[in-house]
Image (cartoon, rainbow, N blue to C red; front, side, top):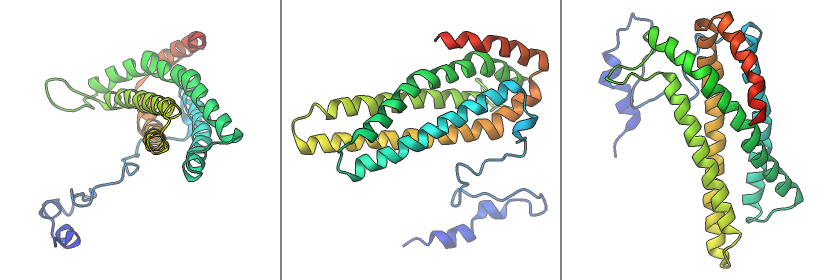
Length: 225
């Protein structure tokens, strides 16, 4: 059997790192956790522009909904795919929130914040190499797409499950739907972490006061969506 711990200790990639560089050593045998991203640019909420504070406030509302939804998913699975009035209410409230508030939140990011910040990151050379340079904004937009996919699959599998007459097939389908729900929750939490600790601080640094004020004037336009 391969001793991964021993391989990790003798990893040549680690030994090639300059010992005096002051840079933390990383290895493919011991990768960093998703939340162990470099956050040296992170700044306190009070030091961010009010536009970014609004985005963070919307994140707080989303995190509250996620906590309730996660507990309801666990209860649904634990109870053998049986709901009660409380779980039904929480599921309905969550889907309504996602369809209304989250859609508006993502639109504001994609239409107001992301394009300008993408331009700044490319100007500052904070992007990947290659014919089509990509920045952290591309990763966030990809997150938005995956969030929509998880949400759609979860909703559709749940809708299918309640129509299945066979109990076993119904349970399997509910299980698939629930796993999509847990994946959605984890992705949203990681997405929020990336924005608040990496992306928003860069926006606060690279976007001017006048540019932020223009965004602020456009915020109310998205209430109609």
